[in-house]
Length: 216
Image (cartoon, rainbow, N blue to C red; front, side, top):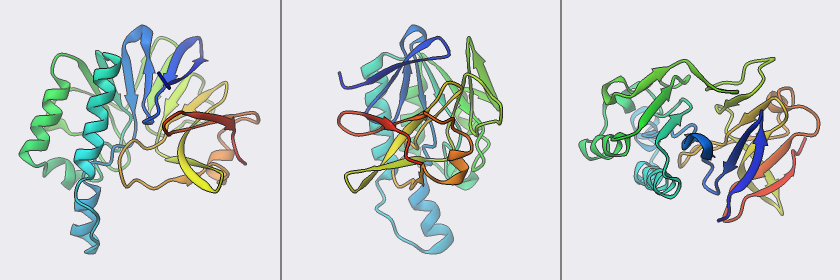
């Protein structure tokens, strides 16, 4: 197993190579910023064409993570769809796929700034959610402690290559974007350096997650 284990706010967590976060004691899997429908939105709004398989790729990885961890709760930390139209215009096969993934487990959609959460798909819809010592929300809140969030799509560069990464310090964890074609914000951007404490760690996604001092 190539997960990166760490303890945060008293909870033993595991960061997976895909960019998902797993809380074994709660059998809880967390993913952020799926941005399903991004290629369709680009075509609809700008006429730009991206390869059309990003939804299938993202859901395949998510299904693999659910199966590998045996998660009974899944939290999607906002921006699960690229916009409202993408959430409401799901292909029937994609809607059925998501419904199948949700079946038999608790599924929490956290509201994002791109979408309010796909109400038609059911599940639990929240602005944020606190479970034990951890609070899950889309965008990091100043002064928060024990917070797990997303939104910024953090990336860090090693050996000339930028990779999505998790950022963590004693107060918060910021997850990378899980979705395909999501882009990212370099960890040395002021928006992130102002949030993360000195001594923060970046854990890069990949075949084997790599932990390094957060590049600033």
